[in-house]
Length: 88
Length: 307
Image (cartoon, rainbow over all chains, first blue to last red; front, top):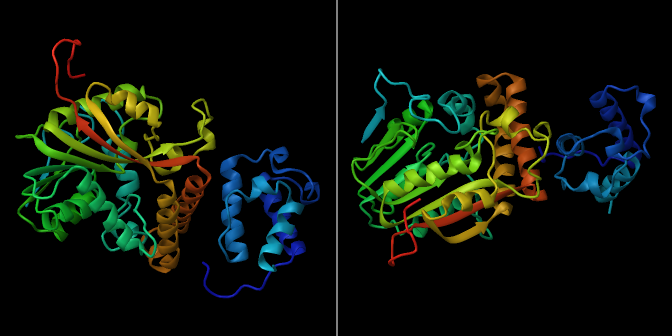
């Protein structure tokens, strides 16, 4: 939901969330997640990427463009971009 | 009004209906219950893409969509109009009340929808049948046909789509008076390659079993020699908004939803609406509004034959 205030997440927060998320989704060890590795190198298909965008919306508390994982294809770059959107 | 189910001796499922979705598969999605889907929908209970102009609410955009199709087939004041896949009756009602159509016939495979229309809209000009268009035999032809968000069910994922769609156009050709029009609204595939992996899309897996989206080329190909294509619109941006509205409504009604269905079902529907909104945004899916006009023979020679 987009009502209510969620405090702005930092890039580090988002990076941690995404690393945990991918480790769960892909059933890999948390320390095997590389924030500079691209999503398609993880074998994430388009349906899973869209699923992730949806879950990110819920985590961040606002709407997101579904093209984000394509524009920012690593955990690191996407976390930075998302943090900058919240704190322009 | 008449609410008709097929007689007990026949089935509402596969009798005569070779192509596309079975009644059971329709009921998997639509018969989760009137109350549940109502939590996502707006007041008119439209379950197809709205048509937005600046400043429209979802409700207004749904009405604008209905009136668009009514205008496309020149239905105002007409004698007989057919609604194929009539949903929860917003269109049959609009046709009978606002468009002054004398007789409106709706077809659906959903028992819940049939019941809802019977309970909600009592108008002598509206008849609804629990029947597949493949089995339907009208007593008289229609001035026009509208079909909103049903075409996606007319061919199964592994069927020869053009053949199935062609059967649909042949039947519609028979249903119509000479020169009659059909206004079709359907989702379609955009930049999705035809040899894609089906596992990458969840349309047939999770959302609508036994259904698949058409490619525009296949729709038009199937209509050759039966219907002239008068107008094609791709309004996928309208579906970005419509799907987002359904998602937000359902989310906002989460508490109510959980009284009607388990959490995994509620989240499945939420996920579906939001992900579909994304797919329209990205261009993976399109939303076609196509106006067809029945082809009549107009000149000698040329080996004309209807289909």
